View 1 (cartoon, rainbow, N blue to C red):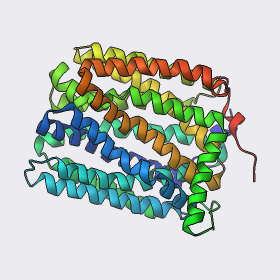
View 2 (view 1 turned 30 degrees about the vertical axis):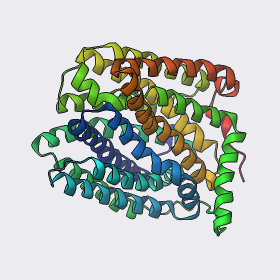
View 3 (view 1 turned 180 degrees about the vertical axis):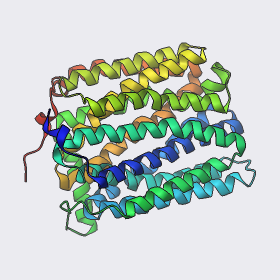
View 4 (view 1 turned 90 degrees about the vertical axis):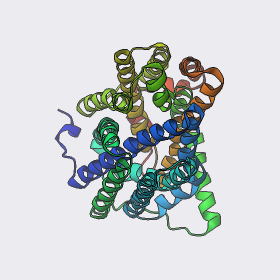
Length: 412
């Protein structure tokens, strides 16, 4: 029995895990319904891609500011205020959906507002989980956090799909309530007591943000892991096209789409549970490359199938592979970063993640507009395999990484 096995997870961390589930239950469920409504209104795959771009743009623009604030202010307060902002955006979507909308313009504007709040919530929430956890249980907490994340991926799309059938505006009100409850829980979580930056001034804030970028660039393992996730999922972002795949390739409606989207959570959630019981500890670099390759191969298969059952199975498999990749990266990056720099580094990582997901959605939509739906998905999977081959040669330190202990920074 290891030391990690006998150290209990603190109650404040368990509360944060509940917040994580509620947040992703609302976010993923809402994104699924927004994609459905936008595609129903326009019938254009390009609009699904632009929707992903609208989600990503605030994260990319605001990352230097949000990371620096997360290192200066109480991360609980930053996260709580950001969740209230997300809830407000969901309420606006609810009110607009009730007005029998005919234009997607206001939807995109509200999604941008929601993205601004996500930009502040991301680094604070990621760093807070590490701040509140005893050092020995961090890998377990990361795995459990992933379980909650994937549980939201399962419950959100399915629940929101059924609620959408009952009333097209109600999913947004459900998102509003979930995010508001999450903000309330954050408000009662005790302080972590970690060190804070004390410098002030706009020039110092810019310097602090750039210091986070320089830190990442000086660490080939961190830089390589972020870059691999960025480009692999950027090209393999077929999940954003699920509304079109469900409609045009598989012939299923909102409930079928909800199950396809929940397949992401089923595969990744089951894997995350396994990671929480028995985390990956050895041969981390080679496992990371292998699962990203599986992700690319599965994406190609998803683009070629016309069977709903096979498509759901493929989504479960590639999501399981992605969950292993996410566990390794989500544990490696914060553990390799000094606590007083986590906000800035994780905000920058948020740009990489956002680029791989939301910007990947934009890439998929644009590619589908020029190459067709099947061509776009198959091209994305093939490009992911090329990325794996290039990274294998360019980042030998990441390839040869064995354990997490190899990346821990020296104590201050």
